[in-house]
Length: 269
Length: 255
Image (cartoon, rainbow over all chains, first blue to last red; front, side, top):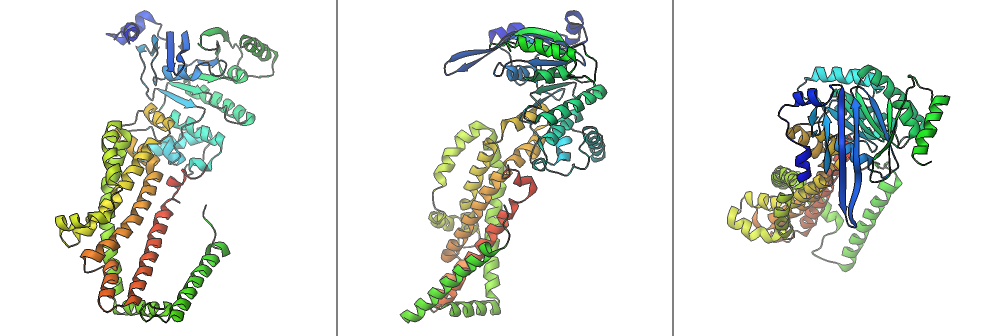
């Protein structure tokens, strides 16, 4: 607790702090966060001091071996969990709380099975009348390719369609940040590739800041402006790679393949 | 899965019922019982009640009592169960008491019901309420407890207000379990109304049975009453089960 107090000074004026401490274009600033869990066998340090910055509109991919604490990192960034030490600042405000500003999309997905596709998409919309909700849903179903499925229930849809519903539900609340935790890893390779391509098209139009966690290096190269490679537990940032390739990216190009080799060798492969 | 009406779902049960009726008939004729009725006597006895209109009055009286007691139980138990499911201190405080009250047979409450509510309609409604309320409370609490954490987290992420959280997430997520509790409760409620009517009342199917025996050993009407109770019980259960087919509920049963 005491360490929290040090790092999470209640700022008198968040705007002033943003101006003086961090350049305004940094959407997310992560500073030396640590996180441990108490288990039956003692204390397990999961995150061992991670720092990085994400610019507004940037896409960051975080790759690392399984079980290295990637999901814990997302939980902390999105405000579902607190670091033991260190600080997270989103838009200049310290200690983010879970909010529609940053929506998490996880591997399992969390589309509500008891609501129709339409009801899921408009779930996060408050204070809009029925017609406005229909307009939002209309735009989004068009955008993500769910036209004609508004009245379907999730168990009538395929895995790829469910991801589209989840994405549409997230985009409906106009989040500034999307946190994606292994979003496509439960899908087959072809569907995963297709959804990645669609996601890139969406990002061109919507310009969200995207932080994607993955163990798929190719996915990271396909999507990200920058790739952070994490070490095994306790996770630290081992290295960082810029991805200077223009979109649409060709994953079979020599540059992409060369980058893939370097990232993989960082992962010890 | 809904099964098609084929030989397995219709023919076999029908054959079994026919065999039971045949055995019954044979046993009565063979033992030359002067008091136990044959199936035919039961059928004509029931027809008599249909013709003079009293059967419908008795059925309606029983059903209205069940509707009142069961309705009150649902109205109290669902909000209480949701609250217990969400607030662990409420659960820890109330659950032991409910677990203790639950195994007390509603029949054991009859003397107290008569003491408190007299011999009018309030007594059986109270007994049905007592019988029906606990299964719904407990199943509702279980339903809320077992909501997958990722759904609650998603709701949290979207920052929905409390009322909407209950209406759109907690209640629909628990609904399949709530319906299980309601189905169990309705079955018990139907058992209890008949028992209550045998003791304290002047209408209803339970009263019909007792009255038929007391007023001249009309065992044909006793057995007719029993069979009608069974058929209505089956009908009520079928209605409850049909809710499980709703699309907003069926997600729980399809993988």
